[in-house]
Amino acid sequence: MNGVVFLKVLIVSHNVFSKTESMGKTLEGYFKDFDSNELAQFYIHSQIPTSKICKNYYRITDKDAIKSILGFKAGKVFTENDIRTSRNDSRTDIGVTASIYQRARKRTPLVYLARNLWWKLSHWNNKALQKWLDEFEPDCVFFASGDYAFMYDIARKIAVSRDIPLYVSCMDDYYFYNKNSDSLLGRFQHKIFIKTVNRTMSYAKKIFCICDKMSADYSQLFKKKCITIHTPTSISDIAPGKDDEKTRKICYLGNLGYQRDKQLIEIGRVLRERNFNPNHIDVYSSESRQEILGGMIENNGIVFHGSVGSKEVQDLMKNSLAVIHTESFDKKIRQCVKYSVSTKIADSLSSGTCIFAYGPEEIASISYLKQSNAAICCVKSDDLETKLCELINDCGVRKKVIGNALGLARKNHLPERTPKIIRKEIFYQEQ
Image (cartoon, rainbow, N blue to C red; front, side):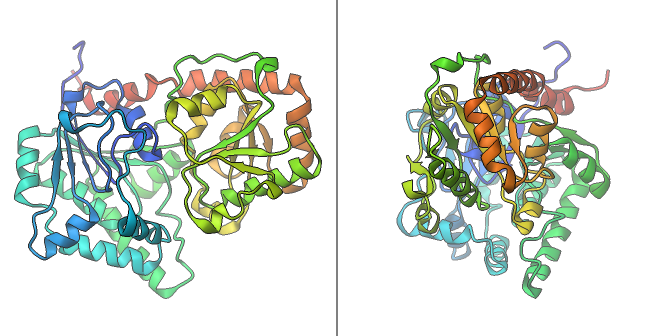
């Protein structure tokens, strides 16, 4: 294979490979050019596989973990015949389970401590898992990290028990930033979390980071080699469309967490009050929290459409006047998303449509777009009306920004680029 060693990678993550959900979509981009026989995935969310990029899955959910403490069997294997490619959404949580997941999203110190405790007491590392691992025979573990300590333990223990390398992928910052630092219990919980993180990072061979700033800072923090892997685009034909063929539509596609809903309302109100054309934002999101949906109304310059499939997302991007990327100016949230680069950035850059970015310049995603002039960027709320006027009325500016965005997409976000970097860092051996 031209110097490439065929090795088997075990991906450990919260979410399953997916074409729609953020983490699952990112993982698909990371491993899209790998042979399916090279991949297996251990995951814990109550989702079913919908992607044949991998054909070998092992799932143990929170419910399974709790039941295992009481002596019940835990864990389910999914093979190729169980993959449901016809489904847009891999999620299966409904009713009480869905309600529990919504509550857990609040990420309070008690939620962290309780969830970490029941996983520590659970029998996730059982005979069924060992049998599945024995059959796959992984040569390394690729861990998509998050903010729960028990997942670091799972990834590390699997790697250590089989004496294989561990690679950690970081897509958000949970180490410098502690969202619950204003409480004693929150500081206690985070201290325990960091101890677990340090044990895992100490064993890890390399760390993959979502942006250059994260790579530089984490290299110093963990004393490990850090490699930047930009999120690959899922758009295959990277080319601009004719501006006069696009609809007069400004779209936002993605999740509404971290007060992005409030940012959109700010933009929407300016569009509506100044009677711009368009005079609203079309928002496409799977958001279900009523406290957020309550603000997604026409009086705020918002038309909410709910979630759409991946093909429709691409069509909406390509045929709109502009797509929005936004991050909050809230001080605490700025710290939380400091290194974040939305999974939609790659597709937005590749869409041939102008990006309108609204948020503080120190956040990695806003800085990334601004430095390359790949978006019309508004980094101060006082400039919002002026920048929206420029977006809507200046075709020349839009054309220049789109050209820069496409150049950045070709440089960093081509679909084949990221898998090549990962394969090189993990698979190539010194001769």
